[in-house]
Length: 263
Image 1 (tube, rainbow, N blue to C red):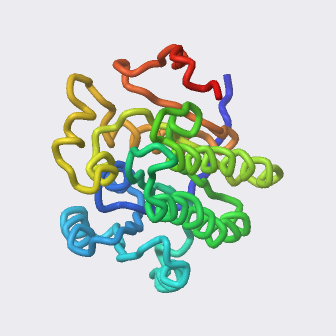
Image 2: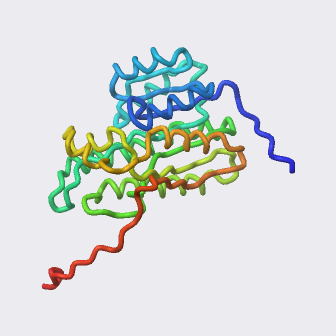
């Protein structure tokens, strides 16, 4: 059976946000190991420097806070010529803050999650997309979460932001019909990274407890999934890919039998 020919540019360029740790760093390493040119964005300059020193000349790092629209635009404008034609954008920068129920949550935590997980993601995508369409190649891969599909107590705004990521990726796919540019949303379950340490504002004990007794996904599991999606033939678009560790599944609906919902 004859397959579809794959014509890929050389060099290929991937921009990864949140490349200083976890899934973002793993994606940077995975794509670099396959010969790609990597643009790594993050807020921690020392980690970016260490990554660049380790990997070599095919990575270009920039200290960027994705919540700053002006800084993002300046960083894109400052890309060296060889890194400028971005083939794959990995919208990875994101976070969860707190686990309080909605009535008790910190509104500033909510605002930070919305700014990072939603506003920054759409701003960067909007900046990169026209070039992809003009070059007739490109792929926007966003890191969502199972929290965007399945609610849990305390997930309130974090889950809502990831539902936004999911729907944005699907709507991108609708808008990109007629172009070869692809859009994918990866939805991991439990991944053992710095995610929980950030959620609990640096409380190491709480963060450690999240992963006790479970063989959680690793950041490289998600990086491998991202690379697989990006390396499929151009006529194949993975719309949504949900991943969980085998030790994670679903529970019955929670039911309050105390009558507490009555007036």
